[in-house]
Image 1 (tube, rainbow, N blue to C red):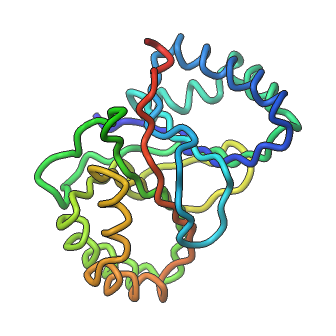
Image 2 (image 1 turned 180 degrees about the vertical axis):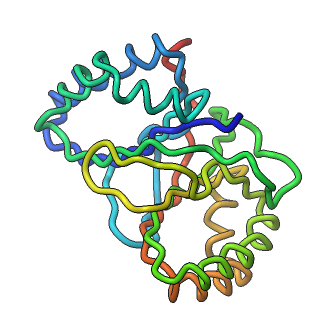
Image 3 (image 1 turned 90 degrees about the vertical axis):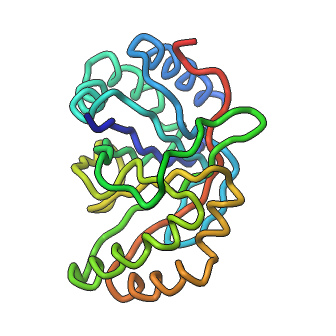
Length: 213
């Protein structure tokens, strides 16, 4: 079964009040046994708009991710965020189809954190975008890319969003950056520029203590 994810982008306005929210959020995620894959790591802004703190939370399934986000318990936690942050939050469905690489990158560790692409897209030319999707596989395979999210179901719960979400895991941040700048990917990207508008950051994975630990 495909996983589910919270795809979160935040600009913190009041750091002191945000800490109160963050502590309550971790407690909630611990109770539900959710997992951070990204939690505010170093990132490079490549395309579109950005926010300064970016988070990806993994759930056992899309339905569970939606239910948790809409639960009365989490809405109380989210209310603590209130005016202390500007937030875009979407619940997105994971991908369990064919992959460009033979195996998924190893889980993040302190010494070797994964790298990720976090992408939001609005497709303007579906036929051309399908050509881009077919063309980008070569570059992703070369650098060990692995789709966690690939334009499955999604619902924007807070703030602004786009119609499609993509998350790609790489063995490390250097591989994620090298893939984006590679000749093979830039060839594919030339197709996407004519087919979609989007936001893309390259970010380091989370390798700290998990909420349920």
